[in-house]
Amino acid sequence: MIKTISAIATCLALSFSSVAQEVDFTEYDLNNGLHVILHQDNSAPVVTVGVMYHVGAKDEEKGRTGFAHFFEHLLFEGTQNIERGEWFNIVAAHGGSNNANTTQDRTYYYETFPSNNLELGLWMESERMLHPVINQIGVDTQNEVVKEEKRTRIDNAPYGKIIYNTGITPYLFQKHPYKNSVIGTMEDLDAAQLDEFKAFFKKYYGPNNATLVVTGDFNTPETKKLIENYFGQIKARPAVTRVNIKEAPITKTIKATEYDNNIQIPAKLYVYRTPSMKDRDAYVLEMISSVLTGGKSSRLYKKMVDQEKTALQVLAFPRSQEDYGTYVVGALALGETSLATLGKSIDEEISKLRTTLISEKEYQKLQNEFENQFVNANSSMEGIAASLATYHTLYGNTNLINKEIEIYRSITREEIKDVANKYLKENQRLDLDYLPTPEKK
Image 1 (cartoon, helix red, strand yellow):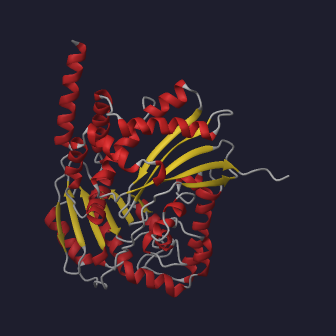
Image 2: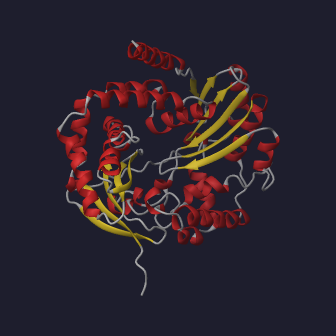
Image 3: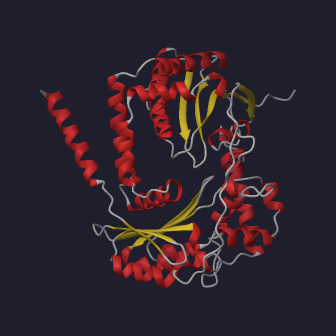
């Protein structure tokens, strides 16, 4: 009886969450090409203003890696009307918070304010787009900031080259700029001239290469007028030519060894090149990742950590991107366990996925997990703003914020088996031994 009541409660909760998470929005274009998305929700006096530019690390010129990420920092330096170093102070003084982030495909800036400061957020983002101050002082300052970030997150962080892909992507991509890291190289940034930074801004930071999102407590007609006032007069730039580089299929196992002087525990990693984030198979691969290492009840965790006690930890994560993705699965060795032993155990579980349907219990767990992720992703104005901007910019379909969960619901056990068999083959992967740097004698 208790199980029956629990099952009914779960179904009702899932049904309610799906309805509750329906995101109403309005979208339109200004005459200059700026795409605007508005989601009005007056339940709390908070508003988020975000701008996503369709420019990322893959758009950089050869020998100038790191530009897109560098601008994530540089465009907080100041504008003609915001003094240098005052951006964060202005936001904090008005009860707000702000941040930015960069990927291979886009750069995103946002502020969250009490709703009575909506106009301030719009003004600041229009300032960033219209006339930021890009000078040598700002470039030199942020150059040091980025160098320290690279040292902290990659160079001196355990497994940093894996977490940030710098030890993976050069093996998987020969032509596509995904082979380069988002943070780039310091040599490229040091060599860049001020005019090159100004040219990068002029090329990619036009309104017709951007999506403006406003979510939260506001009046839609009034907000449309404010947006027109602050953004409508910004001139469009020449259309951006998108990266269109195809990689040849991987048909032979790529064997490699990487060393990290920040670790003591070696790892075995298998890495696969996967399709675009817009491809249905990318969604299936996310589910496969969950089956393998989605918590302590996952297959690899139970097998290698609990039962065999050969792994200290297991990992698997797909990195979905606009053109291609990567899928990493691996384990950290426990004690004297060899990497060959770890690889054999991982391959046994991958083989099962490729040849046998997952159980009904595992399938229901997956459905519950992705329902929960759907709810959590859209539980705040910041989350909704980022989702709306991403779905429009990278997927070309803003309404995926409401419909994407239906893709996960429609994935079958048979499809999981087929996709595993399609992509998770030995001759289509990087076989990477990730080792502590040998001590010098």
